[in-house]
Every structure is written in C-alpha cells, then in structure tokens.
Length: 317
Image (cartoon, rainbow, N blue to C red; front, top):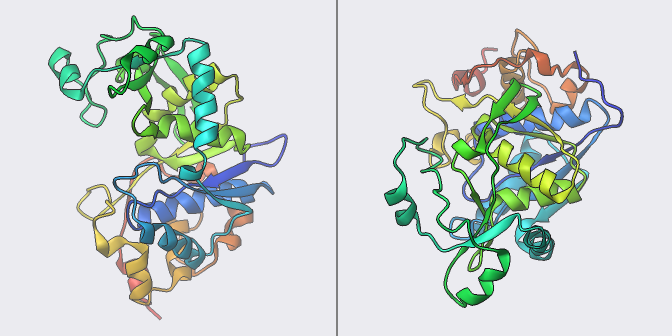
C-alpha cells in the first residue's frame, strides 16, 4: 500500500557526474521519481559535483541525456552544488557559532596510527578525538595550515524508519566518530551539502541506494543541529551483476550511454526495472509514467537485484 502523506512529497534526483550513470542508478532514480509522482508530488534535479578531482564535464551533460532517455522528468533544476557555496558556508557558520564543529589537523595517517579497533573498510578508522578539545575560533590560529571541520558526535544510537528497509538504528560514534563536513582548502563535504540542499529545497523524501545507509545517522544529526525538519529516508537495495558484485561506473557494459548506443529500447528496460521492483510478474515495455498508479513501495524486494541483461537486450517477439 502507498504511504499516507499530509501533503504531496518533494523528491529529488541527484546524479554525481564522476562517471556515466548505470543500471543501478536507473533503478534507484525510477523508484525515487515514482515515490514522488505517485502522490502528486514534485521532483527536483540536482547535480552533486563537489568531488572536483573526479568530476567530468561530459558526465554532467550525459546524466541529463540518460534521464530523459529513460523518460524521467523534473519540475525544478538542474541545481548545481558547485554554484551553491554561499549556502553551505552559511550553514557552516551556524555550526561554528553553536560549537558543534571544530578544526582538525589530523591526517588520515595520524588517525590510522591511533586506531586500535577493527573498522568497516568503506568507513575508515574511528576518529580518536585528538583535536576535539578545540573550539571553532581556534581555526584562526591555524593560518594556512590545512584542516578539516569535524562535527561533534555524541555517543548513542540514531534511529529512523526507512521507507524500504524498515526500522534502522546506527551509532555514529561507532561508525567513524566525529566526521568531516568541510575542509578549509576544498570546501564543504557531501554530508553537509546534501543536508543543506535537501532542507533548503524543501525535499521531504530522500530515496537513494542502500550503500548510503551509513550516511543517514550523520545527516540526521546535522538536520537536528541546524534545526531543520527531517525528510523521510528510503534506501533501495543495490543492483548487482550476475557474478554478485556491486555495479561500478567503471564498468562500461552496464552504463546507460552504452545501452543507448546499442539501440536498447528504454521502454523495455523500464519494464525490466518495474518487474525487479515486484510491481509486475511479466516484462511489459512501458514508460515510467505507466507505473505511477501502480507504484507500491511495500513490493520492493529487500535483497539486491541480480540483473539479467538478456531481459532488455533481447526482444523475444
């Protein structure tokens, strides 16, 4: 059944132009789009390009082409994060004034040397708190020395009701500890920018891949520190290849641009994605809009989807 909402949801599509979009992105974006459209809501498009070292200009343009090829549209945007530095700086100033962040000069090597407990490979070691005694104003005495702004994490679990995964609870203090939200030489991090953008753009429904679950408690803490209303979070189980490995942007065979060049029918691809979400037992070529009235978040399988390229590469008729 569809979740009840007091007002139409505001969702967003937020591609990162560090490589071509792939089938995993397509599935998540379809679900995010339908989650908003099924309740008469709006969709915002945002380009998350803060990772300057990895951003590719051609990937930004290709993302728009890919989304239109799939049949996904938007009501606002595209907004570009690299153009929004002033709003991130304002949020940073508010956190400084509240002493929720402090300047940290520890390098990754320093942190790894201090770490004594095992840690998740993707998250890195837990920050030992070597610079946590500092106040925000101490940044002035560091001059041009590189440092990061770390958010003070209080021990204890952070819980939320995930639209697809159910009740979730994680303790940020055990998941990396005080985390980086900006660097004086590079600017804001993903964690800060995405919270600021979603809050100021009125996003009430965040649908994204399950690989971002560890970011959610950190972002909830930022929402609370900034006094903003939390959106509803929904994390979509990932798409994996026939070998069980998570899809990667470097794998050209599953990029949407490659499928487009191969002459793949996007309607057939949408049909395959809809079936993978449990909305139908047959593969019916379709447009995203065809599923607006049939979108059912409760039907989404809780396990990763093992894709089978034969479904959309071969038309049995």
